[in-house]
Image (cartoon, helix red, strand yellow):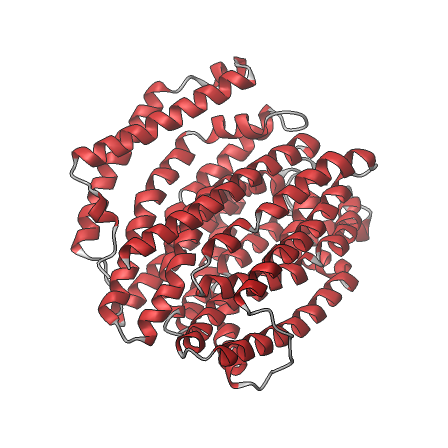
Length: 519
């Protein structure tokens, strides 16, 4: 089991790496096209709303509720029973998300007024941001159908993950990035408003992801005709788990939307600076944190079904060790290399030196919470696999309330950077509560092996950070470099940092067996 876990983790991370690299290419293209100005703010806003709902209806809450129930059905060995559950779940979810999508397209102005209230006020009063409100309402009509496509993408991905077919769902986001890059290259330059072309790219990206996974479901014999089944026992169980999970798993997304609401009152560029820094944060979060969580949820669900409590805890411990191993150096690396990364990736076209400086500040704040964001992804499945979605909701409410308090304090003093600081601190609150809850329930506590493992990591990452800082050129020197030289320097610093980190870990006695689950 430990080798299979490690192999599955590597597969998901490898597929996710391809997607995240293309995601960075996409952001580079968008930054070059629009920079961090008013129109960029509007596009990121129109893209963020359906992505938030995606967490509610698709990848987040639904998957967390659906996978444990599907695992039970699959474990029974009755394929007809499994197909019946999939038919009822897909039909019921499909009707609901179709209604939501239709309402979103028709009511885009209301949604924009709700989450971009500062723009709405300017629109009513004839202020300088009135055009932002009108443009955002229009773009939402184009991007909102993405929610419908991605919901079924998440459904089919959850089915394939339960069967151990992790590569397909991990590779699927590549098509969204390709669609947006293609739209930015071939559609946007031919339009008076290039952001409209990007919105079309989001729509096409959702459609292509939807179509990509269908052949794999056919191959598994699990492409079934959707049926309405609100009162079906399996669906009842899923929605009972899903309703609280819709909030619990989406706390960070709600916090980000709250940030967007406040940022609509701040200077132009605030939403874009937060977006670009968040995109760099999402790279290691998706590559490591989400990948590990994707792998362990089906495994934890099977351990719970089989009543293997010791192996359940062992799998949890493995997930925490992997997060520490990869998350700690990623966090420090992002903080130390914030400006060089932003310069190499985004500083061209409409994205200038000032944008690098502004985005680097929010990246520092976001990066300080990276480890906690990743731990949330691994600790939450400890509840969902046991079909306990209510406890994370309680913790999520506390975390969201704390985020609002932190926002009120830090945004007043530090503007958009304060919003990132508040998000990072609320992640600390959420992760701490999740761990304490598992500890109190006797489900999981950090093992002595993991504590010793963490001590080695602290020493190694301190050396890594010192090596990077010592070798890194001054900011003025970065500005004087050409793009090729910047890329070479950044690549060299990352390589030297990684090499020093691994070397110190080996010197301190870390071996391959420390990376395996005892279960």
